[in-house]
Amino acid sequence: MKARWFTPIVFTVTLLVVALALATVTNNYFYTAAYIVLQFIILATAWNILGGLTGYVNFGSAAFFSLGAYSSVVMFSLFKAPVPLAIPVSAAVAGLVGLGAGYLTLRLRGVFFAIATLAMSEVLYTFVVNWDYVGGARGAYIILQDDPPFGFSNHTQYLFTVMALMTAFAIAVARYVETSRLGRGLAAIRDDEVAAECSGVPTLRLKLISTTVSGALMGMSGSTFPYFMQYVEPTSSFSLSYSVNAIAMPLIGGMHSWAGPLIGAILLGTIQQIVQVTVSSAWNLLIVGVLLVVFVTLAPDGIMGWFDHWRARRRRS
Amino acid sequence: MGNSLRIEGLTAGYGSVRVLEDLSLSVGDGETVALLGTNGNGKSTLIKCIMGIVRPTAGRIVAEINGTDHDLIGMEAHDVVQLGIALVPEGRRLFPKLTVEENLLLGAYRKAARARIAESLEFCYETFPRLTERRAQLAGSMSGGEQQMLSLARALMTTPSILLVDEPSVGLSPLLVQTVIGKIKELKERFGLTVLMAEQNFQQAVRIADRGYVIVHGKIEFEGASREALADNELVKKLYLGL
Image (cartoon, rainbow over all chains, first blue to last red; front, top):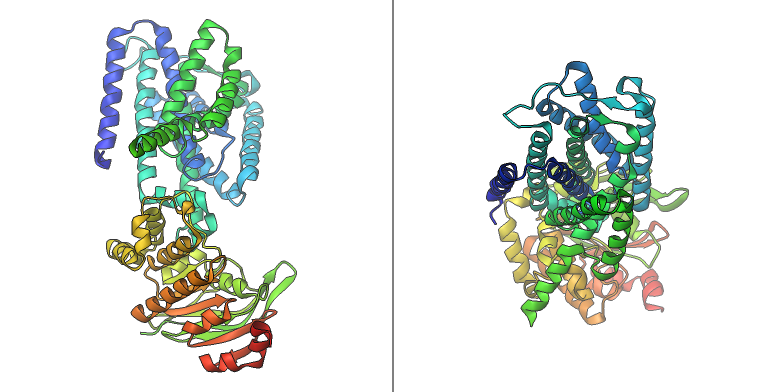
C-alpha cells in the first residue's frame, strides 16, 4: 500500500463504519462499549510508538491518559470548553509532559525506565488528589446541558464518533512514524542504542520525539473521557488497568507494526466488554493475565508475529 | 583536500581508573595507521574517545575533514558521524533484529550520505556479494564473517572521509580475518580513505598498514614509521611473536 494512500483509506473506512453504526444501531450501550474499545486502541497504539518501536517500556500510560482527562476538566471549569477545543489542548499538555519526562528519564534503560514512569504516574496522582480546583480525591463533574453539536441525537454517539476519528488519526500517525526515516532510527535504538548513535542516529532527539508523540496521543485519548463519563476522579483515571492494558494489547497483537496494537486492543478490549456484561468487571485483569501467559508461551511475537511466521512457512513449503 | 586525525596529550579513563595517559598520535591524509596492542591496553578506549562515547579528561582530538579542522572533544557520537568519520565497532554491533538492507540504510542516516543512498547501496552489494544474497535476512542470523562484512559495509554507507576500525579480527577464523583485512585494504585504496585500525592481530594488521603505533598500558611505547620498522622492533617481537 502506498504511504500517501494509507491515511485517506483509514479515515474513509472509519467514517463508513461510524456511519453504518449510527444508521443501524440505536442501543446506547453499544456506543459506550465501542467508545471504550476505541480508547484502548489509541492507548495501545500510542504505547507502541515508545514501547514497540523504540524499545522503552512505559508503565505510566494511565498518567498520560489522566493528564488528557484533567486538562479537559480544567478547560471546562475555566470557560466551558467544547470537545474539539479540549482535545488539542489535552494532547499538547500530555505531549509536553512526555517531552519533560523523557528528558529526565531517558538516560535510564530497561526496567529502570519502566519504574521511573510508574513513579511519575504516582507523583501526578498525588498531585491531582491534592489539587482542589479539579475536585481532588472527590473528583470533578462535567455536566453537559446543551444538545450535542452537528445534529447528533445524544452525547454518547457524538463522543463515539469523535473517538473513532481520533483513533484513525492515531493509527495514521503510528504508521507514519513506523515507515519514515524516524521509524528506522527508532528501530536502531531498540536493537542497539550505542551502535545507532555511532551510525549517526541522534538517539536522544529521536527518543524525545517518541515520548512526546506517544504522550500526546495518550493525552488525546483521555481528553474526551470526562465529557463521556460526565464525572472523573483520580483513583479510576490513574488506574493501573490503563497502564497494564496499554502494554498487554500491543504484546498480544504484536509490537513491530501499527496493526499489532490495533488487533490486540480490539481483541482484548472486546473480550473485556463482553465479560463485563455477562460475568463481572472483576474478571478484566484476570483475562489480561491469562491471555498474556498464553501469548508469551505460544506466540511471543504476538498475533502479527505468529501470522508472519505462518506466511513464511507456507511460502517455503 | 586533506582528511587527517591528530590526537595530542589525550588522557582518559573510567571513574578513577586511568586508561589512557598523555597519548599522542596522528593519521595523515590517505594513510592507514595500525594501533597495535594486546587486550586491555586502551585501544578501544581511544576509539571511543574519538567517537565521543568516552569523555577524555585532558588532551585534544582534531579531525581535519576536507581541509577544515574540527575539534572533536565534547561532540556527540552522531555529530562525529555527521562530520564524516565512520566507525566499524568492536564486536560488530549490528542491529540483529533488522534485515541486512535495513542495517545498511541505517548507515546512511548521515545527511551527506542520504543523496547518494542508492549508489552506496549498489556499491556495497557489489563489494560484498554475500550481502546481496542475504539482503532480506535478519542480520543476527548471519555468520560472524558475514556480520563483519555487514558492519564494514554499514560504515561505508555513511560515505566517510575517515574510517575507524576497532578489532575487525575478533571472533573470526584466520581465513576470514585475511578476507576482512583484504577488503579494508581494497576500500582504502579505491577511495583514498584515511584509516585508523586498532588490532591485536599483528601479522594481519601489518599487511595493510602504512605505519603503526604500539600501545602499552595507555601509552604509545613505540612508533613505527614504516611497515618494516614495526616488524623489526624488539618490543613488537616480545609482545607478539614471543621472541
